[in-house]
Length: 553
Image (spheres, rainbow, N blue to C red):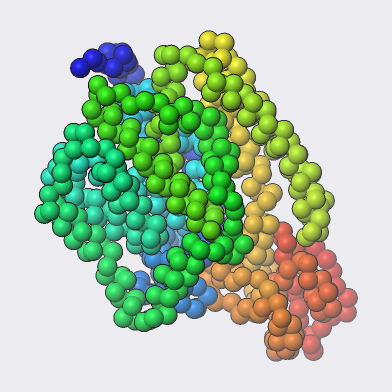
């Protein structure tokens, strides 16, 4: 068997470089995922729901039944609530503590991806894989939110690695690890946790060379480990809540999501192809070549792992592309596989220069830069719907910086196209870091009030400015406000205007309402009005304390 061309060089690199590159990768990943993690309030429906479910779990001491705003919450299993509640116990209840478990699992996944790539394909390929994952917009965005997708990515990645160890080396330890990790993944996100067994079964069918058949005993041990981890909570919930729990979690949150778009989250079959092209840019430009490259039959372990990565990619992408409900985070579990494939391909390109991936990167950078430069115009048009067109100017500078990052990527790809491969790749990494920084530090602070962060800011104002007023919500979801206030909040739907008016009769009230419902709230006797994003907070006194006139903030 012929050695890989880079194997001798890797020994030299190891002696000269030591562990410094991995320390830099770990530190850089921590900086990207942890810096300013609690600066923005909770935004997005899912992040607020999970954070509040964890808060109420810790406050009540009931670690079995999740609740949000006092009502049972059956939509997801409890593993992330347990993690976030433990984080609250250590650090106190805050957005930082709610997001910390997801961010830490993102860092672990980056380091594990780089370590695996190094062990199988060499140091440079492993580091490039880690860099591709760490600098992707997908991880930078979703890894900094307290939602389930990055933790699922982490658990599935380790479960797939356990399958590889089980398949190639045998032994009960790997079987136990695979079953236990799969059980944790199911305890995190239900049926989606079954991706690891699906990847394992498909790969066992398509990759038969050097196959080590799993013994019946090891399969039974994996199944036992899975059951011991996952089953107790499901059985406890079924005993407590009966059919209501099963119909919500399994029928509505799984079956219904598969067959029809829920909550307006639909999209075409190629939705995730476009998403990957943007959220994994520029590294996605190297993915087609990586997927189509022939397997080297001379290196059995590399052949095994490369086929496993391709199966991993397909088994995640195809089912979610066919599911009718589509959300950007659903395909996050395939990012470690894509990063490893890209790391291998980039390592090869540094030894065997080509043209088309670099050309595709240049074209993609120019197109994305042009689109991002139009973001303030789009913000003006969209903001007009909620009375926020005048705030679009705040997007001008971060959009220009973001577009400048894409220009840097295009310059780096041009260097690489003309033979300056190392400097070109370094410029691409730098340009991608600029785009990530512009998104996190410039774009998100402007958009977060319109992505669910507005009620959180208003709840903070109500807590500080109106401590003696009762907070009620009109046509506004309660989880973010309940999280900030640390208590349940009365909530009225959009067709309950008369009930809201009745509720104002008894005590001073802080009312949170949609900005667009001016026809309702402008008629109320508010002393002061605050605005954040697409919501307003009204200070409404009891009728006998009503003051003439109103003020606006």
